[in-house]
Length: 364
Image (tube, rainbow, N blue to C red):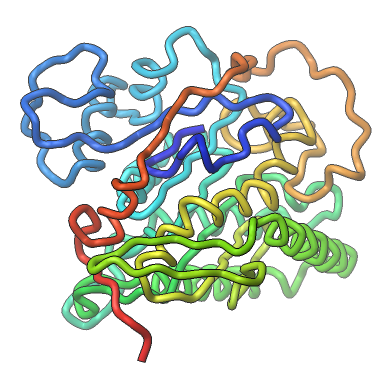
């Protein structure tokens, strides 16, 4: 699991995974004279340019011969052959996700991508999205539009979960908000999906409907586990928000394994909620059922092309002992890396010092 400014060990239920994931924290390269704590070689920082997560992506790409993931795994997980890879980004950490997805070979290695209130796109002078094709391509793959001709394995393939708030962009004519980007990505994927879906057999569509109901039920149960009352403080100036009832998305969109969840909120605490409690909800709703159900991957690195895996079909499979190592699919060593991101850093992000290009405002 590659966690880009997202994992706080205190808040995430790592012990609920059947096999504890190996968590690699990506926190961005600062402006000091060295690459930062993630550079095991401690060489002086080269002029990568860009923002902290862009610099870190460039560093790992150099180490991996052009592949960010290969460079990261070589540096941060030596001797471990990943079984499957989840890429998770909170806020500015989504810059790293974007860099990985731009490399088509790296994108093919991913089992899961979870974007927590940070997926945005730049706009041209007419307000159109630019430089967003890599997200569109992954969303199309996750939607399953190329696998919906048979009821046997319609949900094989990667998982994409995009979570967002209603916080607006500081420069709406130049950069989208996370809500705008999520809605746009769903719309573009939907327009590409349904022309093909018209020829999908009825039993596949029925299966899709039943799976979506299962996920929504699991989402409700996961939201109900949030401790109440929940109080979060953050922003600039700091504000405190209290949840007295279980949170639940205001908006839900889905196409196959592509899910888009809007939680509303326009303040700093709403942003911080995404990293702490929302991430936990999404783990329990999507990632844990997917990873706890089977030992081998269903998408990306280590995939078993003959497997029956699906993000929602764990109750319908009788598991057997996994076959001897799939190509590229070794067993991850158990034990989680302590990746604590402190609360003051989260507050700093919400306050705008590290979250470039966006601001927090009260709803009108």
